[in-house]
Every structure is written in structure tokens, then in C-alpha cells.
Image (cartoon, rainbow, N blue to C red):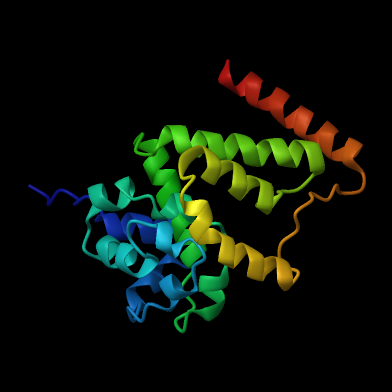
Length: 189
């Protein structure tokens, strides 16, 4: 009787689902990713810890973590990673896996997603200040005090705007988004 194929480990599935994901095996556990992450203090597991858990095949713990959901996709971790691990892309993979298994904090992330989409529909791009403010006032109002120092520094350095900027050719983007919504509705049927 031939050997039955074994199910790929959690790490193998994560690595296979992420372009460049196999480089996760080269992680030095240096902590540069977590130290670079603007959302790191809010995460229940830093990227370094999360990736150690992936390597240890701790699927339940990883997919229940809030870390992938708090990743703001700034790519700062990837720029600073000495091993050039696609950290942000791995976070996207973990989000996709969590969604497929229904393991995500629906209320907070649906609010975040709706706010993000609303800004894109209205201005053609995300409005980080408004998005972060709305999220924290709704879900973590006391954390706004802790975040104010970082926000002030970003304002001083011109890295954060308090007013949203509208892109040129908004009617074209609106038409594209409208068409995408129609396609999505048709696919649901």
C-alpha cells in the first residue's frame, strides 16, 4: 500500500501562499521588524514572535492574533529586515488564512475596512489621520493619549496631514469603483 501524502505543515502552507515566503526560514529573530513597526505596541505578538509561532506550526494562536490586522502595510519592516523577508506580504497571507477560517475580530476590522473604503471612495486615497483617529476613538479612546506624541512628531516632519487630499480625476476612479462593485454583486449571485 503506497504511503499517503502528508498534509503540509502550517509553516509550509504560509510559505507557499506568500511570494518569497520560503525566506521566513532564514529569520534571525533579531526583532528589527517589531522595533520598526508603528503598530507594534498594539499587537498581541510582535512580527518576530508571530513568525516564530508560524515556524512552530502554532496555527490557532497565529490566526487568532491581532498582529496581521494591525499591520498598516508601511513596509518599514521589510526595508529594514537584514534577511529581506517579505514581512508585509506574510501578514497579508495570514489575514487571508484567518478570513478563510472565520478567525478575525469582525467588529473592529469591519469598521476599519469601511472607514478605509469610505476615504478612498471620497478622496481617491486613504486618509491616515482620519482613519487612525476614527478607529482609536471608537475602539481604544485612551490609546489616543499615548499616540499623540507620535502623531505630533509625524506632523512636524510632514509625514502626516490633518486634511485629506483628493486625487485628480476622481470621476474616473469613481467609475472604476462602481464597476468593481457591480462585478462583485454579480459574482455573489
